[in-house]
Length: 104
Image (cartoon, rainbow, N blue to C red; front, side, top):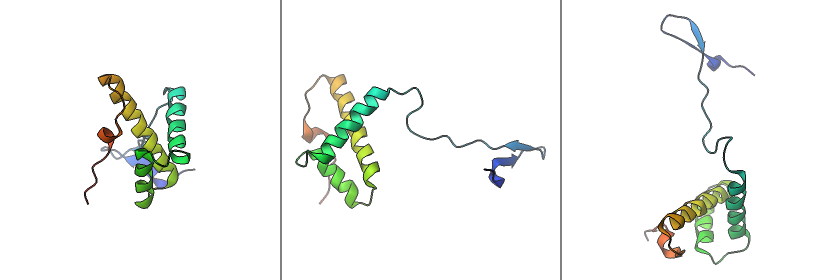
């Protein structure tokens, strides 16, 4: 499929192929096993752990209008960030440390 935005004019008046916007996220060399683990953990939170603080974050995202699949990816990213922080600091998981402060 082609469109008029595939080509741009350069300073000399010639035409060059436009740069394609790169997708964000993981590249082709990402760790597939870790991705599956974090997505599986997020699925477990969403499907089974309704008392977990991460599920409250998932529910909040849904209430704000985020699509369910994107909300689950956000939870997976949060789990990955928490895991990395725990690994670096060598501390045990404390759910209250990782909660976003919600103003009332």
